[in-house]
Length: 367
Image (cartoon, rainbow, N blue to C red; front, side):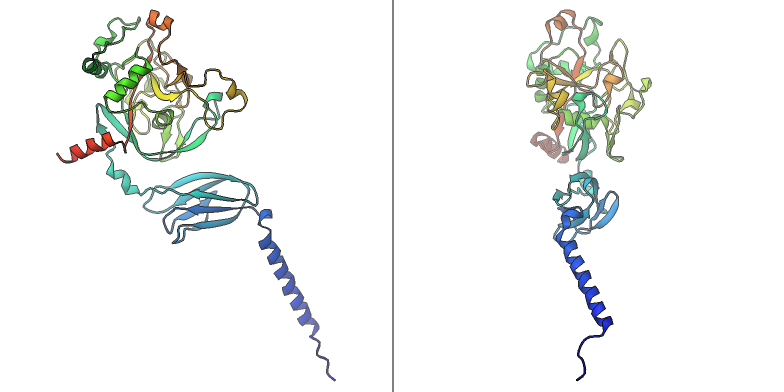
């Protein structure tokens, strides 16, 4: 009888295929050994997903895309789609995990719906919606830890509030102007100087009267130092070099607003380094993720002191950096009142979505 056994080469081929199948099964069953998985949600169909600037596919009609076998650690993720503002973020993960992000791509044309500059109780500049990096890991402990935040569209005063603007507020609300600073007994006779010598509560009252608010730290810092095009922050509003011709720093007197136009931020906001220091809305507290180590030992953190930004005309360039943080009690201390050593002023902000501003837009659109 003829043997029915397979030829040797056939048995070898079957064994090889079986071995490869087993390897494939093991490969698929052990993703934890091969990296982590990223799920991208919310991006328009056809968006290109890049991880560490390498394309890893496009988004599908259902809006969810899985990117598998990514190297553990910190990965840069970009989601790009023609006609939209690019979305950027970072993801940090370990092997075997699944991370999910929501890619918020804002249509380019949507920004054209908002004017870039308005006159709303003073000139204001649009700071477009998007992410920026708050803080710095390169300087003082209270500036740490860097973190990426998303801010909606908002407007901020192009200039610091002036003596003339604050005087109109005092007339309307039956308030008194501050006492003149000791270094200039006629300071308030100049209408275009930045107001100084007002408490945080005075600044907040003015902002409410003007149908605005004080900017919080994030809003102030983005307007001062962020550059949308390069997705990076400047050390000073104009760039990374301390240039005396661009700001009123290390002098003995404030200057009129708009005296240093070349020192504006990338958005065109003026005098965010030097001139008058500026109250902001925020309490002096550690940033999120910064409560450990030496940062937690600052006894001035809490809900008493308010943050002051931008340095003053007497500051050094180091103290006028865009991430530099100072604090002060909401009222002036007894020795400051006695010596009238005023250095702090302010500017205002307002969210583009604020109903008060929306009413303003509607009224002007109907004219």
